[in-house]
Image (cartoon, rainbow, N blue to C red; front, side):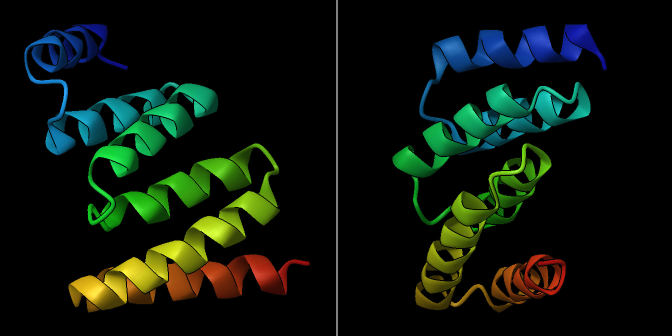
Length: 107
């Protein structure tokens, strides 16, 4: 993990705390560190600011799965699919459907 890159993202976020791009980038940095709780919190922050940042639902769901929060992941996936359909983000909706199939097949 490039701590310098993460530090730069955090600095930029201090100047533009509502930047969806920067929040997504920070969440990905936490993912690379396997810091699931921080990644989850950052994705949730992003989605509270911009619920139509459709790609974040997939990554948030994956982080929830990583800490065995399957029910929360399924809820996030369903919400994400609904938002993706509203936003006409078919690719993201398809990825979420695939993830839903993957985790429900495992149960």
